[in-house]
Amino acid sequence: MSPTDRIREHAGQGATTVAAHRARRRLRADRARQLADLLRHQILTGGFPAGALPHESALATDYRASRNTVRQALDLLRAEGLVERLPGVGTVVVAQKYPHGLDRLMGLAETLREHGRVTNEVRTTVPVPAPAPVADRLHLPPGADVLYIERLRRLGGLPLSLDLTYIPLDIGTALLGEDLENTDIFRLLETLTGSPLGHAEISLEAVNADAHSAAVLDAPQGAAVLMLERLTHLADGRPVDLEFIRFRGDRITMSGLLHRSL
Image (tube, rainbow, N blue to C red; front, top):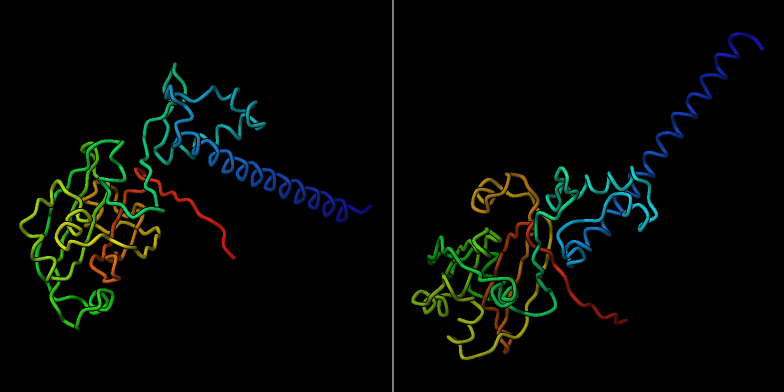
């Protein structure tokens, strides 16, 4: 074999080795994400009641993973702010996410009543001409006035969500004299209209926090937040409440019970 051929053969073997190494790294990263998903579920559902995760070696045995994979999975959870490693203690849970159900029409205070008291900082309450999309969603004439409400909602004193709400003015005017700081708007709407709420259309997406939202929620600018858009109707079908709710993604988790129907 000529020197040139030997060089080419050696280079080919090196390329194969590099490719194999990269493939192993990708596989380990995939397994780390899979393990992080399983551990995250355990954390959020109270699977570690003592507040500490098992030792890395125990996790490796329980989940049939390598120690390196376990360490990478814990690093992912640490980056999310869910766990932290304490010298002499191990990996402990340092953050709690609160469950928000998507299968029942409830206000935030009703949804989280088992986890503490929800308080509202009412930042803005003012009549404004409805932007065209808002008027359309609320079935109002173009340019009709609506009541715009902006609230910062806290649980246990910690910022949880920033709620921007639009309500038809014939109902909103009565809301101005109500206790918006301590009462869910849903309850007030049912009381003031004398009609129960019927249903809501919702959409949920992840967005980056703009400067204003980040400052109000005490979150880093650009951090991911859960944006819930909800249009709520009375039992007779009238739309009465259009909301854009930005939840801190590190403090809330959405869940629901779905039935398959073909």
